Amino acid sequence: MDISIVVVSWNAKKFLIECIDSIISTTEKYSYEIIVVDNASSDGSPDAIKEHYPQVLLIQNESNLGFAKANNIGIIKSTGRYVCLINSDVKVLQKCLDTISDYLDSNPSIGLLGPTIFNSDRTLQPSCRKLPSLWNTLCSAFGADKMFRRSNFFSGEQMLFFKHDKTIDVGALSGCFLAARRSSIDSVGFLDEDFFMYSEDIDWCKRFHRHKWKVVFYPEAKAIHYGGGSSANAPLKFFIERERALLQYWEKHCGRAYAKIHLLIRLLHYGIRVLGGSMLWIVMYSKRRMYSPKIIKNFICLRFLLCYSNPKS
Image (cartoon, rainbow, N blue to C red; front, side):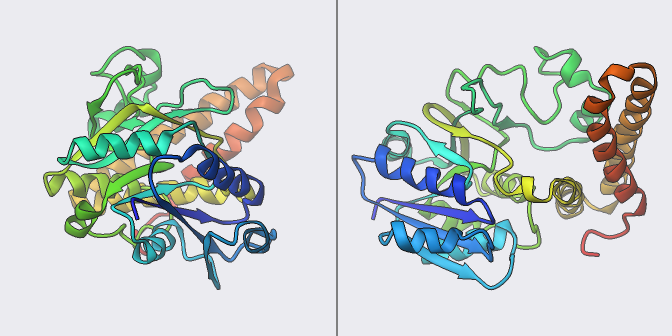
């Protein structure tokens, strides 16, 4: 088997079907297998897979085990030379997986690769990241990454200054679509299951670097990421999980002292946005409907961080 595609799904039936269809219709050159790991969906996703895709290996978990653990279950069952972790809300574009396999065959030093990612309207979705640092966290808190979008120095983790138009080595890649070499997984290890959801991709990229594997963005392969396929089912919960996971990452890789500094910067980040959003809500009556969800999201995250005590609590 050349390519193993692992798709983790939780109540994202519509997206999941489109994802599988896109893989089947666009992959021509290499042999592949599709492994769907369902995290106890209640929307009929498993039944749809059984009925329409008998060639797909379906693994049904009895509960929501989280993104990292579910992917690991799929990786263990996979047999391909390359393993692609693809979100259920991703649509693979023409010859994407063939192109990735061609490039990995020609570049054996690459352990992890990510394609160009588009939004649903075909605008670019930045997928290249810098590994987290106190500086880029601070830049994000004060909005410097948005004010100076063309600046590498003031960018946050997201490399908004990069046009995503050439192949480069990067710190980290978006976890919505990751292609890994089997031999690199054997040396780096699986995703860290302590991360329930979010930051497991950043952690994995960090470990690939540590084991001297290249992490590469490859623009010739392309896919669409709709976003929110699963997180739309409980958006506020997922915002909190993202903050929890970031703190876990800092605890794991940088130590408790740096994690506390990161926590203070994130408190500043959300404090600024709650205050600023509230002021806009007061003075701009006609746009209150637009500002209210943002204020609520920022307040929920601020409250979570104020009460945060331990990454495993």
